[in-house]
Image 1 (spheres, rainbow, N blue to C red):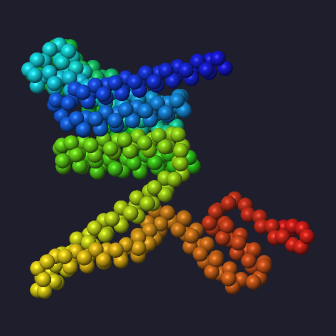
Image 2: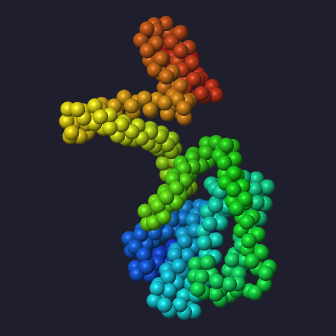
Image 3: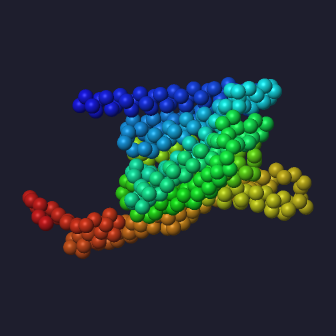
Length: 394
């Protein structure tokens, strides 16, 4: 019991230390970015990093032997440290005084991203949610990924010449040897297919999973589906809006990981996905109908009036009338396509309810009840007890 208590205190102390360091670095990044970037964007970024670290702490304290919570803390700490390193150099460069501290910060920024990218895209897919790789072969891939990470870090941190983030600063720790750059390029080049293989292992885990593990993977898959849109927004709008969209998507993915690991309302994921599909499709349909209705009515009413108020009012009324039937129609389509078993069970119950009104034969009714239970619940065995006068009998 004493060893267990010591272990719990050690976990709490370690997680509290990492979270405090993450929060301190995030606040420092906000203070440093006040002269070089939007304070609001930097503050939101700091909130996201601290929230990611906090969720990692919650997971690590509940499941200390599972590396998922610790990975989230490492990712948050690395992102916060990376932001501080960049802002320290940028602030010094804007004042024209790039000293040794600024050069060191730029050097750290050049390789600190590895401690966020590798855990997020390689280690995490291999061990989520059980904390272990899918099989011993995938465990070998994990060891290869760690080795490649070390090679990439060495080749990046000690490459001679100017730093990527600071072209005017020569690497203070650069090693003048051609093998250093080769090691970095080879390590990073092999990390890319390794990360792809790790994501493939997560897909295979989902296909083989059942029960609780499948629901955990559903949460993360649903949240990760937003990441392509976030990266697209960042590419189309290379500004604060795209970056804030990316930060929000990151926070949603981490929140989904926390729900999956802590198993809070775990089985609500089907409801979340269903509502997202239904109301997402409904929003697109109604928006398209509204815009199309306004344009068509404007063309139709142009001979009578030049005002567009009638077209807007008519389109609004049409969309309002379309809302309820469109929602029911889309919900039915989603249920049939993605939730076929539940849709079939609902239809079976509806048919049984209608048939129940006309069924008077007790034996036939008992057979119908057993059939409906088998079709909807799919139990391994069904036994029906029919009460008789004074006692129960099978």
